[in-house]
Image (cartoon, rainbow, N blue to C red; front, side):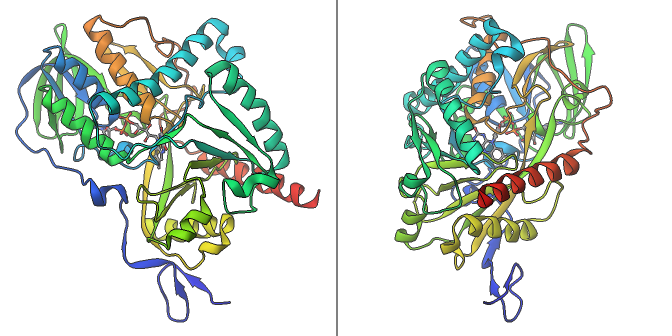
Length: 446
Ligand SMILES: Cc1cc2nc3c(=O)[nH]c(=O)nc-3n(C[C@H](O)[C@H](O)[C@H](O)COP(=O)(O)OP(=O)(O)OC[C@H]3O[C@@H](n4cnc5c(N)ncnc54)[C@H](O)[C@@H]3O)c2cc1C
């Protein structure tokens, strides 16, 4: 058996293609477009962060005639909104014991928000005729152990009753209908889940905001925010902007300029790879129904086929600290071949990383603190949710919300000593990985 190598050393089968890129596969087709025009001096609303959230807020505000400026530290879209997996759930990524955590009344509102967030982004795609490779083929959630399969069966009931989702139970004997692998112990399917090309969605949302009259500017990191009468003075890398209102949409990329958010978000690095194109039969064998997929491990894997069906796009926690993309690619390739040994000869053409924003109560949040409107923390499920919360912030500023959002609350927990640097992640990550391995080892012995 030949040794595999991530650098293509002599005698080894290279894991990386010769034209390997340490950047998102999605950007090949929908590259970031710089926005380097000068900044306006004064606007009604300044939005910090040009991901789905910021652009969604800008769109609704600009359509209402509010002068709106979106500022990003990098080129517009530099954050998670062009780096994600493009999976849109049915609204199911909420803490399993939500009612006990926040009380039934608020839990009901939050579940409604979760369902509405998906409806919002689907309606956006449909009504604005967005060309974002959206398909609704459902999702397969795979159990990493028999215990996890039992847990999924219990969650299936909550998905059906709480969120109105169409859930199928797939025992291990039928698993190959969903995935060409014996790695898992069965799973469930959620029919309402869909997938899209995330960078195309970002580009389309930027066009919508700009067409509505919003100005989008890149390379304009906001370095300080100060009060100025009833408004704000923002110092940016490209000069000063005065704004009546400010929206903070920096999510997992939040820094010291917004310490309130930074102290409440745990940024976790997530790595992804895309393989080179493979023969269609092989991709078909790996994911026969071409659904998106994920598993129940604490250090989870997520997977899908590319929109053209020819590649596998695979995500996992290559490490719980920052490493470079070539090293991450080799680790994720190994993880991927653990699930699908038949992909051992398929090389990795792209590897990239992005930050996922976790919160201490496992809930996304929106709200207002010291006059700054914000939304943040989507636990890795923000394509629909952050787009929706951005829209909700815009509507709130306009005084046009149909009802208060269940995620809009002053209770946004942090830890007394936490300042935004998650020093504990390698420890927690190591524990998670150990527990996952233990679950699987016990399953193999049973
Ligand atoms: C690898 C990965 C896979 C994921 N997969 C999925 C998935 O399949 N489905 C799903 O629903 N969600 C997924 N997510 C989560 C989803 O991508 C995010 O929730 C969503 O994109 C967040 O959008 P946002 O607008 O809130 O923030 P972002 O898109 O992260 O935008 C924040 C922006 O703020 C900017 N910024 C930060 N500080 C400043 C400053 N001081 N001044 C100016 N600009 C600043 C950053 O440059 C950045 O562009 C994934 C995330 C990652 C990283």
